[in-house]
Length: 339
Ligand code: NAD
Ligand code: WQD
Image (cartoon, rainbow, N blue to C red; front, side, top):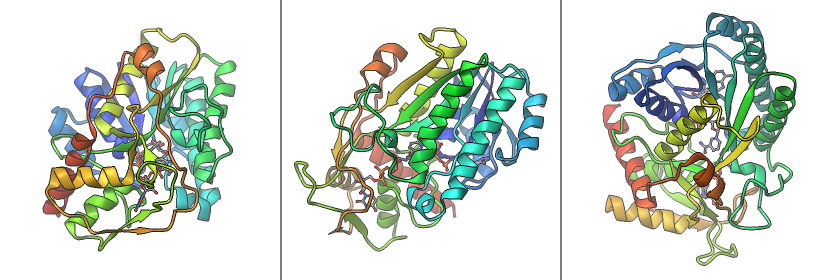
């Protein structure tokens, strides 16, 4: 029951490692620490009581990745999180994104093929839907032209996986995440953005703790009830648990097709102002924010139809928005107090 978690010291990866260990899986993490830190492996051990095996190297390095897979040919599966994920940075530096996200995926697929490792779970994103024509958005919705090189790496990755598995023994599951937020209840692990956060919730908690002066709310002229954009925020622990269910489905050979796609969202859309209100409620603080113009490339509203995941995986997101914002705030406070 040995699983490779690439990007396992990152935000979603670390929470997934904890959930895998809880279910008795032996976990090997590979991460080059380009966007995370080595102590996270210890924080995982503090929660689960078991330190995951950790190897630090760049999965875009073909030789090192091939060598890793030769040494770990007994893996039952790979959960592949490792990627760069900042949309704006990908617009400024597209080749860095294509190289990191696509080359590492190809190296992993090669290693799996050569060592007959049967199961791949891939981190995809709701960004592949762009602004969907119908809401809520189901897995059958058409893929829209990507808004950014980052988004394009997710689309191309899904295609690379589908093409590769046709001529190999590999089975694959693409999980399309909506907006993961929140942190583990222990507040030992959470989201750790480098520099100024791009995403809403870390910007909120960093503003509240005094690291940022003011949150800018991007746009209040959207065609939504309060004018601000709507997303499907999902608690990172719910998301992590879906990965355990997905890899078990693969190991137990319960897939209906060799390549499956699942939306991971709650099915509820919340506006930016609703997220701020939830944060203010759970923290008892007044957040300093101002409304500014729209952020280029943002879609107006998107939320998931999670029926296929709920029915097929037997998984459902359980935690509500207040639990998400409260856990994000607890993590921000614990982490800053540790510094
Ligand atoms: P993260 O940056 O916290 O974690 C990614 C980890 O991968 C980091 O620890 C980083 O050091 C590592 N990494 C990156 N490139 C690597 C390489 N070449 N070799 C080895 N390690 C490498 O990001 P996250 O939020 O945990 O996201 C995980 C995955 O989920 C990514 O693929 C991301 O694109 C996808 N995703 C994230 C979100 C989100 O909002 N967080 C939404 C949809 C999809
Ligand atoms: C949420 C809402 C912003 C910051 C991004 C990626 C997507 C996926 C998840 C990986 C939007 C508004 C934000 C701020 C704001 N990642 N906002 N002020 O843009 O939905 O999705 O992360 O796959 O691909 O694009 O998430 O958290 O950045 O924004 O008003 O300072 O909050 O405009 O409406 P987004 P986000």
